[in-house]
Image (cartoon, rainbow, N blue to C red; front, side):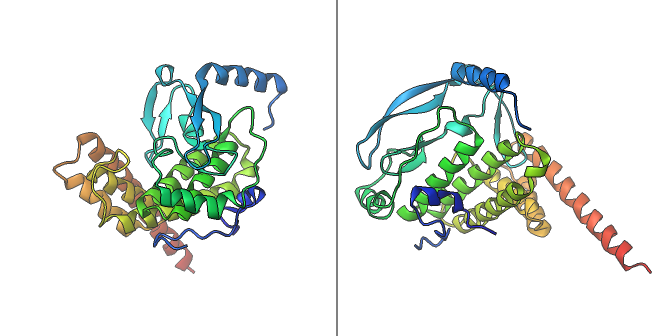
Length: 282
């Protein structure tokens, strides 16, 4: 399988950068596209940003939250909104030096980290023409660049795990927009990021203080349970989900969600046993 950063090679960056949690180094008609572009312009606006690494000033797109209603979360806690997916716009990327991060953490960078970014990213970075309209493909590259920056800066395991989770969310949205015959490689890539997210969240568990990225402890347990389920690790999935279901701090809605996932786990276990039984018959 290709490196998770294979598509960042065009920026002049090391496309084989390892993700180490120990801190080491259907085609649409033109008229439809035009209508979609107009709709998007009504939902987003440009804001001026100053890069904390190179002081370059540029415009970054962001969603008008007042008209974009939150509806629900997916199985893996991906937030789903009524009009437009804000995940597409949640990473700010400086096209001058290559620094990229979530908009909530973009300016939270130390002098040491700035020095590291300049030495290991900016010195090699090849600027690209910025897209006029953002889409899931753009968001996927921007989020990978944010993860790349986080690795280079030596960010905590939980930060890198969260970025991997977000990338899997981006791919979920991407998969909803493409044809069936193009989904296989993207689905495999998604699973790889799910695996990295699970590894990072597990490693971070003993050292973090809650809440983290808006998650309290029961939600964290739920997330570990659902990621383990996605990876086919059913025994650990049931273990984490059970913690949610018996936890005194768990809200009833989360308990119900955990119970639904546990039912899916049990169904998968049953299906696999039946499959093995039928294979063993003469």
